[in-house]
Structure formats: structure tokens, C-alpha cells
Image (cartoon, rainbow, N blue to C red; front, side, top):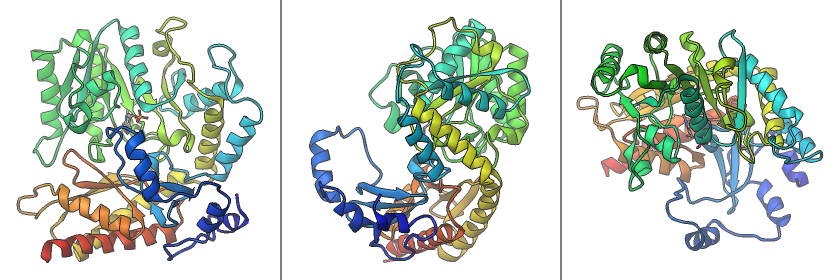
Length: 464
Ligand code: PMP
């Protein structure tokens, strides 16, 4: 790292300017200097259009909650690589742990020559996960892979094929997980058929007037009409719907799901890929409901920016698969395991669970102010658990029609002003906050000020 980059560390990073002092040094240190536009032109020819990017900026350097692009522009990062950076970009402890591991060995394949960091991380995750029963952990590489394996394990443990997922769910882009994902465009378009024995139950929705009671009736009806409960291996649910809109599962619903699973011998899988590791103020979002799932899928913020995912679960269930049935060449990569142990230690040492809860309260209060001031009758809902917060935009309060176009414009205006935002929700009309929990109050405030300016600009587009 250049000396200037070192100086502009967490404490001293540039505050208001768009051009940073870091980038010229970083560019000097880099032989191939390219602009955003040059990379975009090369990408057009080299990368399929199916891999879409929400922005046209290309990353050059990032630290904690700030990112600089190839043109030298600075951004406050409220996206964190889609919920991966609860401990921020390049947390010093995470980077140091990964580097130390790189000096020892980077890959042996756990299935050939196993290693300590995998065991240590599994022990840590078993201890952190809810429930005082014995637990075991499988490590893989991506969230979708974790979900695939959780389903395999549930099938092996129950000897049943069926899986129930919910409307608005997102569980990944592989073929099995796409079958579970409850959104056609863009994910499921043109790539079916999907695996059999996947059933969909209604997720409660204030907008659609679906109460918890209705949702549970819907699930019970599913058992009467299409899905014999004795043939269902698992019910999979995100304790806070992620891509689907940052909507927490009402605790009462989660408790009823647990009862239904117990009644029929069904495994309850909590998909914590996006909600885990402090995002909601607890290690796992399901803890808020007091429910103990049989299996938990994890990824994203677990490893502070390294590709790592896992399934944590009841030891007896996790042992259902025969030796050799689980794994993959890279699963539980040692560098990623070392990074994860450091990221988890950072969450513990820096009190990030409590910070998440505080940050969530603050974000909700500030969004309420901003909504009332900058866009009266457009910000229809502010919701979430801990710092897993989203705001939802509508055309007006009377019709409460989702306004994805307005939301897109807020995001575009924010980007121009130096704030990275990402939408979520079935109609793309919510903006979710995934700012690192390590971000300083000043940076969060700076981001919120840009957010307000962006909302005002989007309202002005409508007026003129
Ligand atoms: N489950 C949930 C809840 C997710 O949010 C995601 C990713 N957004 C996935 C699974 C899939 O994870 P990955 O993209 O790492 O495959």
C-alpha cells in the first residue's frame, strides 16, 4: 500500500471531496492505468451481458465504508458487496489473518489434506449458532452451494424429497436454488425446468394483505392440495427476506413454522446468508424469534470479503450424508477460513452486534425524517431488524403503488453524488442498507445526507 493510502486510513479518510488523495498514489503504483470507460469497453467484448452490474464504475481501492473507482471518484459504500462487508472493506484484522495464512499454505483441499482453520471455524460456528444441542458445520464456497447442501442434508436425514420455500425468497442462482428462489425476472427467465418437488407457500405481506394467519393457512392448504407433509424434507426460509425486500418474518410466524416442522418431522432451514453475522444485531437473525432451526445456511459477511459459505446444523442431521457425499475442491478454503475467524473476532472485539442494533434505530429515525422532509407521501415503509434496514418508495400513500422507477432515480442520483446504494423487493422499489457496521458515525451521516439530496433530486425530476 502506498504511504498516502496508509495515512488516509479509517480515521483520516477524505471527508467531502469526490477526488481522493489515495487514488493518484494508487494509480502511480499501478502499471496499467485504466479509466472506468476503458474497462467498460473491454468488458462489453469479454463478459456476457447476463452478468449485469448495478453501476458502471470500476473498483480501484476500498477501505472500510469507502471505495474509490478507476477515475479517482470516492464513494461511501452502503452496499458492502451485497451484504458481505459487515466488518468493512479490508478490515485490518481480516487482511492480516488472510496474509498470514497465505504465508503457510493457500490450498490443499480439505478432502485430501485437512487443516486446522476449517476445524476451528466449524467449532466457532457450532458455538455461535442458536440451540444447545450438539452441532456440526460443513464449509463450502458460495451461498447457493450452502443452500444446495442444506437441502441434500435434509433429504438424506429424512429420506424425503420435498422442499417448501416462500414467495419473494432468494436462495441463489444455481438450478436447485433457482427452483427455490421466488422471483421470475431476471433470475428464472428462460432457464427452466427446475428440479421437481419444490413447493411455494405465501410469505406474509402487509401490501398484499397477507397476515401471518393467512400465510400459515396457505402452507396448511399446500399440504392438503399439492405437498404431502410426510414427503417434505425441509421448509426453507430467510428470517429476514433479503433480495425480496428486507422484510423480517414475524416472530409468531417463525414459531408456528417450527411447530409445523416438529409435527410432521420436517427440517427447518434458516437461510442466513444475507441476514447473518451481526446484520440484524444478533449473530443470526432467527435468534430474535427464539426459534432454533435444524439447519442454518451462512455466507457473505462471515468471511469479511472472502468467498466462504457453510451449513451449520444439528449434529445428527449433519451426519446423515455418507462420507464423500459432502464437499467440493475449494470448500472451506484455508485463507477464507482464516479471514472468517478474524471477521468473527472483529465482530466480537468491536461490539458490532450492539452497534448494529444502535445503527438500525438511528437509520430508521433518520429515514423517517428524510422521508417526511424530502419526499412526503413517497416513503411508504421503513423496516428491518437491527441495521438490516430498507426504505420503500411508492407513487403516493393513497394507492401505495410501488415506484421502482423513482427508486432507480434515487439510486442514480446518489451514485452521482458519491453514495453506493442497491435496491431490493419484488418491484425493485426498496433501497436496502448494508453499510459496514464498522463505519464511523460521520461516514454514515455523510451517506445519509447524500441520500437525502438524491431523494430531493428524484422528486425534482418528477416536478420538472
Ligand atoms: N441466500 C440468500 C438469503 C442470499 O441473499 C443469497 C445471495 N444474495 C444467496 C442465498 C446466494 O448466495 P450466493 O450469491 O453466494 O450464491
